[in-house]
Length: 421
Image (cartoon, rainbow, N blue to C red; front, side, top):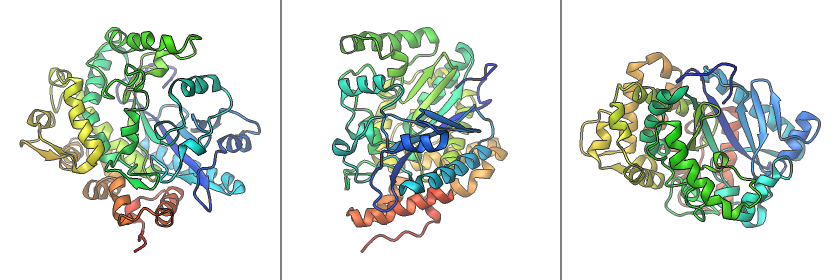
């Protein structure tokens, strides 16, 4: 996140959305991000600036990322800009018999056979990753996420923001899980992407840690606790020095002191920009409450260890909104009275507090958020309409409808999907 003058807490945001490119008829992944960017820019490029939204490549050639060109304060307007760019991209992709598909994982892609790494620009970095970790796997080549970049300026703001993000991270996937089915199988994880996320670099465990960042609340301590161990651990695998600790750091929220921002990376992408930006707006409003001390003191937030937060996170990535949180100390951080609550109950509680504290901020998103909070995650809805039938034919019906949701910028609850009986 870069701007001419330093941004302070919650002044503006950077948002990134990743989508699959698939064949219009078969919905198989189609590795033509390079051709899309060439049509848009007139030559092979790594990114194309389209006004307020920039299109850019990712690790694999069947994924395209849309991101705001500069940090923005108006998320409603940004949602419309993203939606407009989705339509533009789908028009360009139509000449290749292709289109964009949402959700955090393709339901039948075989990454061993279908992975194609991006062949231009920073390909030496991608090749190094592939050599060390092997990128032909779901944790690398079959995952799409939404990234939220939040600004800070100086150690005091970083401490408040990092503490708030760490506390909220364990329950974020309850809102955003959208990856229940991979290779036509449901293995019990509503957020299977995050299961792979915590495993795909286990060869060098210092890179991802336990996903929840360490109790670091200054630039110096962050370097000591996170960057320096990564630098030391990667050396035997990267003698040419291609990979830098700042880029290797794969915790679920990463601090970029050079940019003055923290990037949240554990959010599965939703079915449309309006769904993503609604969820981000709720997360932002709760983070505001936490960082201001309105819900819990800074000391209380900072006292939570990685291990204790990860226990909750580990439940949530499996069960999403249905995960039971049986830690009254954690619930008390949010002024929730009781010894236990589902993640869904806790989010409804937080939604009410945030809406009461700043009514105007969430009012534009109520039509989207209300059904989401009541029905649960997109992953749950996908499973519901599948009726436990994970055949290619049935999944094609469901994910074709999801593609329509993306193109129309609608939410899944407004679609009328019926699985095969």
